Length: 165
Image (cartoon, rainbow, N blue to C red; front, side, top):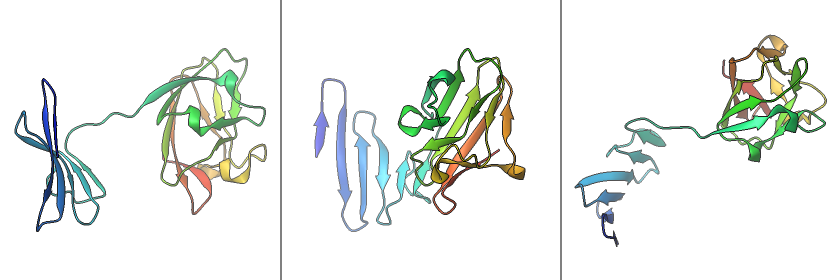
């Protein structure tokens, strides 16, 4: 299959016999994306070694969330979050987050506190449903001062968000 417009010429290729599927940038003479028979995807890599093998850099999507938008149970709703979240807001005193709704296995979210007040991520707080809660180091809350961050990964085996820090 070929995709052509006034400035680009792309070609989708199935290399028979090897089982490799690739997208080729014919305009620049470069192979861009590879899918091998085991399901590994390479971007700029012709022989991917992992599920996603990337040559070069990548960006994580960032959004800004006003801490005043946290619901009454102090949960954040996953669909309002990108993989990096700047938390802002005029808060008085420390604000507490007790969970993130609808975690997906392996999902990673990094939070950056841009508010002038401390932001607390509560360990196993009953204000959130068990599957939305945080399992934090030392079984204690994590307090973020302004400009500090925390990265969390969701674990289906634990049914909790775990700190990567």
